[in-house]
Image (cartoon, rainbow, N blue to C red):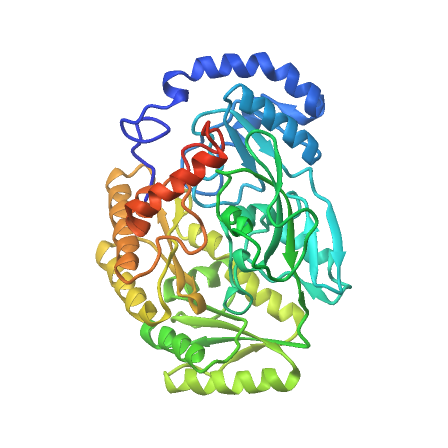
Length: 485
């Protein structure tokens, strides 16, 4: 769903505090600026327009909605004290990481205080024997893996962007490695969360780092994917994995979308423990070739990666090659050393920017549906046909090993007819996924634009349950208001 026609920051005909009582809120915040300065220090607060606008949008096409003030807390104590102050005065709180989200999750729809957590950037308590590490919210995935380089361990969840790890927790991010290593939801052991009233919650108990538990409700998973609507994540304890002995990457082109996706399903059905299996259609391959100066055939293509022992990888490769060739796939183009693999996956991770380069000056909107693996060939073929019929620019890339794929819609926001067609297409795509027992978002989250689709997905009772949970944790509705529910 695209938020392109709203008459107010909350949507059509839905009044909000910024549009109706925003001036009163700003007066309250202005009166508290000195208190905020006292809590975080003069150099850790800003009301400058440029800074506020920078924090009022992510990489999505949703319009900028700036907060009234931005602060950079240095520790959990400061986060707790400022949250308590905001709670007392009914001031909205918007957590901010690196701003790489794609669903408008950092937009300050009702103004308020933006908590930029990037200066809380310590890596804490690395335990190589028990395979876990605790990080503050300013630590990004690339920073963590650079830190782990000499430990023999790594953190595999890889959404492409160098996102903050706690931001990845908040959106339940995943990425190219999820088919083997799971998503953030599978790799979070414990969280430290500051609740809206300033209380500090450790979701699995303070400093606990067990691999499994049957003790009570699963509070950790409740906050994974909460998108900043229940509390501010200030620490995350994450699972780590041993660096595989051998890693081999390969590229394989196919005569059709159906052949490529059929190969994906068959590889998974055969139980091959593949680490990555990514799909790019011919339009996306063409864009990546141009953007990254590559020479791949302009055909539907799979990018694959195999992890394990030398013998194990060789066996995986042989089995996968047999399956792809039975579906008309080309011989594998190999990438064995680190530099070659980095080049291959950099091209895949640059798909967003490569797609935007197809139409300079236009904006991008990434759809994000996920369906059962058996339905994947059907939905991708139908979506490709829909794009051609609609005459829209929407190259397809996907984490097809999880049943998750994206159409990166590239459009001119000044062309109202094109905007209308894109909105209708994205609605059709999401509902096509729901009709196949899938979800409207595999990894980007709900944010601003998919709240109605969430209602259709989980039903009236599910939405009511979510609202009740929200009310218990955030009775004043100050935590990232206007998102999710």
